[in-house]
Image (tube, rainbow, N blue to C red; front, side, top):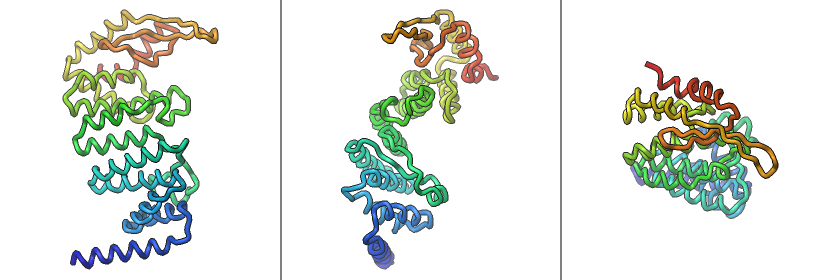
Length: 287
């Protein structure tokens, strides 16, 4: 019975490959995605493998490798997924930019097939780390995540708010990896950098995780007292830029760590609204 099933898979794959002769890689990629939407995994794999092995169309090569990695991750083969993501990363480094077809849902892909999104080096590394999590290889996850430069490896479009959103996600993944290695202090350090910000969709998870770690490590009373103690030493720093523009920043340390991205010119506003009335401090104060 196994032989018959294997024979059917081979014939189906060969039939699909034959039907793709003369088609462009772009058409093959689309057809492969359509096959997956129709639960035809054999045709999907045949299409993605053909796209990933071509020497042309680097954007589709990387897209196909990422699709294959997602497939194997979903089918409980993270080792294979990691290998494919390494290949995607190697191919990615050989081109200036990568365009990726949005395939989160079959409907979206089929209706808006010309929509393209930028693939980032950081995005590939984040996905790689998630596969390492499945294997409980937390040290390897940290190595992958540490390779991400949030300013150049993620699609932050030059916006500070987006830098914070993207950086917060990477910090959350790093914190989970450090917790997997029982390194609580490093996990706290990762999450502290973004605890005064509430940008994007994932900040609540980061805040909840940091609250749990801090309370388990120090206790609620100590944590709240530490925040007030730290506020007493917070100060406004003015720096004259080369352009002649004065830059304002708050010098603020929390649990011994200097907090980044605090570009405010009013120290009283910072203490009362940015810290005391922040989403994170309100979360800490909840019963």
